[in-house]
Image 1 (cartoon, rainbow, N blue to C red):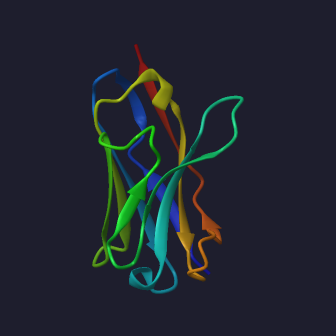
Image 2: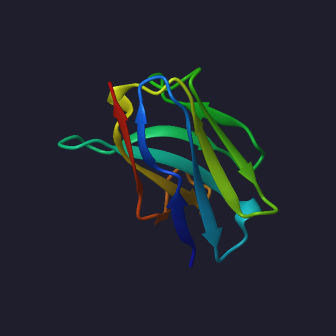
Image 3: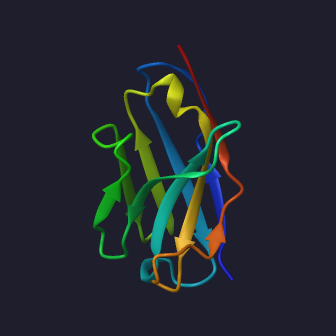
Length: 118
């Protein structure tokens, strides 16, 4: 069983930066892939970024060049550095763990709110 706890959300202005953290417990963090998703009010949850256990990553087009996903296996933590934030980035952000290494995500955190004012 894997538990995920996000932190670092808040209220910022357009153009500002935030760094989200997701602390994992249970299992062997370095052995699974991790992802970030977000869900805006009235919209479906959408993919933001993924980092493989190897350290490779990829991003949704909407955040490419502004967001960076990283992981610290010694701290069992995955990060999402968000720069040049826009009002349309406002959402609840969730981290997720792909333990089965089958491109799905079996475990999810509770989410952290990010609000970007214009």
